[in-house]
Length: 172
Image 1 (tube, rainbow, N blue to C red):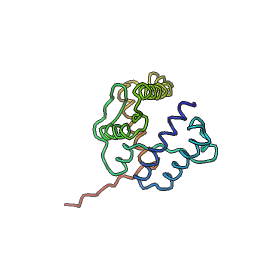
Image 2: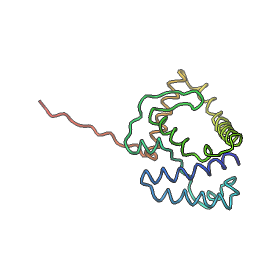
Image 3: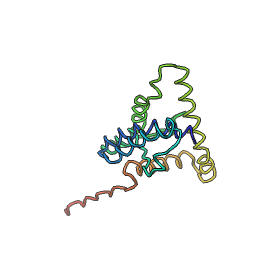
Image 4: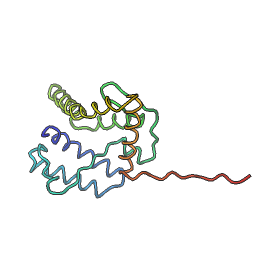
């Protein structure tokens, strides 16, 4: 939990940037407040004091920002190591990694340790999902693809799915 909180605190700063890029100034201000509170009172982000104070945690990434700007999904891939992504989200992930302060640590051993710890923690948090997929999916690839696409669409539109516009063709 402490490890996840630490990396979550770092991620909150990038979430604030993405919220600004998506036009959600109130959420961005909340995210900046979370970083400031958790970095000081939460001992470098190890504890989520801001959450205890009622500041909502948001999770935004550059793939979501691109989706909000109208960039389409593109083809779906299941990448080794980084997992499921669309073309848009793969590009977004590359921007996220480039802007992530953990990747900016000069000491290679420390940087690699931080990155490995983050991904081991992430993988451990996904283990319960693996069991569900193994038990429920007839076709694992299709199940993961459909779940991923639905989840990302929900994230991009903050849970409010847009209505599809149906254009009637004129009578001939």
